[in-house]
Length: 171
Image (tube, rainbow, N blue to C red; front, side, top):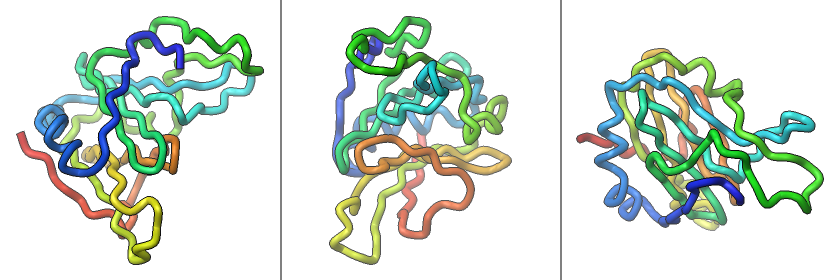
């Protein structure tokens, strides 16, 4: 992707994600969301949801990126959001880091109450998204999750979808 420092390690399933990142995600509780970064195209401002969503909790950055139907990568303090995104000369749009996203902006400055992992368990067992893992962040004014939109990230705010099963993380 040409993102400096981004070396994703994709995991599949609740147990793999919880074993690798559960303790660190839980330890974010009590920290304020001090900022975030997403990749947008310079020409039209559209969010490029294939790239990681970087959340900064007072100097501890968590980098979340979904791909394929069920893969999730979580990184810690590796992505350089100050560096130019390279290798896109062949593409008609120019990606760049941005601190704008209407769904994340209301949470900046708030203290994280709890992080959780959400597992998609739909009533239709043939749903190809069954078992995908999202990361949820709960704040005094509400919550958001970063989930798999079947090969890219999505950010959902407000009430959690009823087909998610929530797994609280404790440090």
